Length: 262
Length: 220
Image 1 (tube, helix red, strand yellow):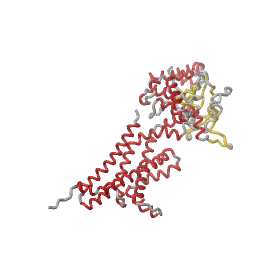
Image 2: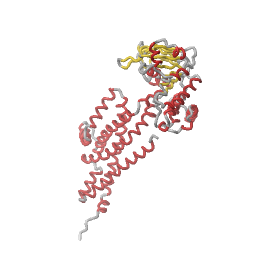
Image 3: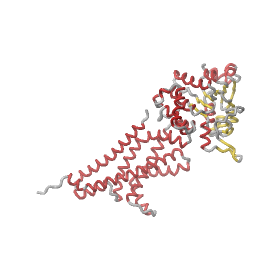
Image 4: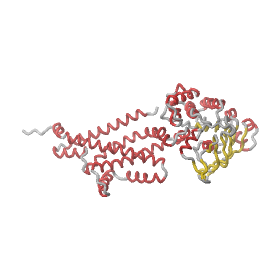
């Protein structure tokens, strides 16, 4: 297993025929998607459209019943064995999860660890870096998100925006090949949204591949290479930001955009 | 004229009985708290994260033990172990009963603490590539510890108090030793009071220990 195979001919991420159901309720009804290396793809849609679920399938926080997710040429979550679909063993799943980084709506920082320890935990236990290297790398990233001075603060002593920036540093320090952002600014006070978006935008400009779920349409417009509009578990429409926002084809997207403030 | 011996004199005369009783109480309590905590943490983990076939034996065990008086449990261990072909001393039987009781309480405390941790914590652990065991060791258990401590102190002091029940199966712990001393000198009030103070001191020490640990691991 080598997570960092660089094969530029293939898309970084491809999703084919993804189906996901909770019991009898189908939440993803056959989703196909590809993401090229270095691109930013934003999922938009009303709540319950399945965009967060789709994002969480990519790092297997949700399992799925049908379809394939291929990241860096590796099948995520399941493999075929004697014609049957088998879930990867836990170690492989954990290794695949390490190929992606995720920022959550609720930050999910570890409250018992300092900002620095939040970032070094994965570096030390997953990447097995020695302590000094892990600390140096973590400090570099905390500096990047502007929080080096707060490295010894615990999450409870940081504002929401600061917590989310630490959470992004924690994810990105693992050098993932794909970053997943699940509504990273939805739980923030309005005046703190900007600082988090600025960090994400900086990463995008440096060529970080991203899959993003957000309600910040202005931001999505600015930062995305491709926007995907989801509705009731399906992809309703996709395209470059400008054409999608300026000339929506489906009535559902038109209705959706009508209710959004830019 | 006859002068009855003073209380201090009697206490001095009974010093070996008291220290032996105190030692026995501390030993069986410490053993029960230690074994009960280890077994209870394991049971709590299975109850929280196990599959149904792993959960139900522990569920039955916890419900059964919690629904039974400790006294009955101690007697059951004392009489049933030999009947089942396992000859054990009264001390061992009593400690076993207390351990089983302690474990059932700790199991529920641990389960409650783990279930109170937001789901996002385990997800965040998974997302950076931690395996379940690593998440447990570095993310979940350290947080559960903070929840568990105050209630654990409670459970531990209950065990010390429940250890007095071992007097009934003939273990000369602090209470039975006290009664034996009183049978010789008839200073009932003084010596029961003295035994009470010793029990209090043991439990106060546990409470102080708990508080010290709590302070060390407190979240900012």
